[in-house]
Length: 159
Length: 159
Length: 159
Figure 1 (cartoon, each protein chain N blue to C red):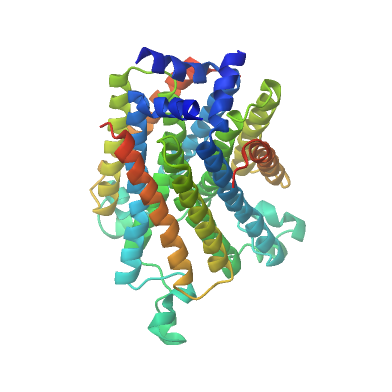
Figure 2: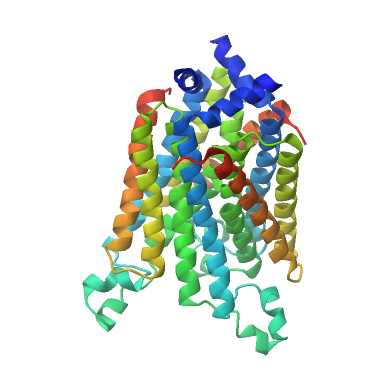
């Protein structure tokens, strides 16, 4: 058993894999933060979607008025969905890229730019910054993922 | 080649990794079930979103009335999206956590509580249970994921 | 260090794992394409959701009329969300399946059918094809994922 565990530990000891683990955890935590921001705006704006969530405001019509959409809540939710659409490809393609034997410096460059771009994207969406701020930060993360996908297919292609 | 296969088999033979594989498969299957529940409510409530889905109900106005939203359909869809938002982080952070060499008993505790919390969350959303049932089950799964992320960053941090 | 790297390279040298890497990258790139198609329709249909995205069309009422939903945009977005709901389970269950020691030919069959079904699903959604075209392509990808999940649980079950 200790032999197996050693092998697993070797994977997490590899520097490229450790960098992947670090930046993936960071972007996933950032994505999870969107849930808390949504909850914050739902509570401060009193804008809910489920009737059971407004029960503490009383019964009937007095609570019903809080079942509504709010522009700030919807904005955070769009940012959250955009995270899902872009961080899921990074999660999968990034893992395969980390296992495809890239140079450590090249891999770090990819991971750092992706994480930075997604953090900028969140600020650009929530502040919001004028375009093309949000568009550019989205495109940078997208391009990094394409670059990693190219390396994976070049290394591993097996149709 | 058989040597390589042996190494892969060793990964799946590791007990922590097997536990990860088991609970990840369970929560992903649970998430997939949401698609079937959505389809069930769309058909029984006759509430569709794509015109081509109502073609069997006839042409023109007679079919058009089934292009509508239904509270039960929307509720399942919100539960499905909440699964995506929470199970994607578990998928990524849980994998890295399983590779970071945790104690088997600690890992099992994390995986079991997460899977239980997400199953409870689905029941709380679909029945629906009064709050804070849904909120608490969401928070427990969230906290478990944060705890795993902390272990990953403590073990693997490489910026 | 070179010993560790060799072990990682061995993983990506395994044919089943290479097939998983290839088809996962293909379906994730296909999913990412939905972002570009959404952007294309938003721009050509002039249908935006964020006020800052319409700033280039002028200020006030002249720009406000482009803050609207468009059926083509909404259709692509539904296809994108359906991808997330189905490709995320493939990403996780497929990885565990690839590590569970399946026959190469069986694994290729699963991966090829899943990727083909999801590509067909996108065409069926965007053209759109009459039902049950989209429904069947969805069901085929769903069934392939269930089949892989069964193999994972049979090989690795550890509750």
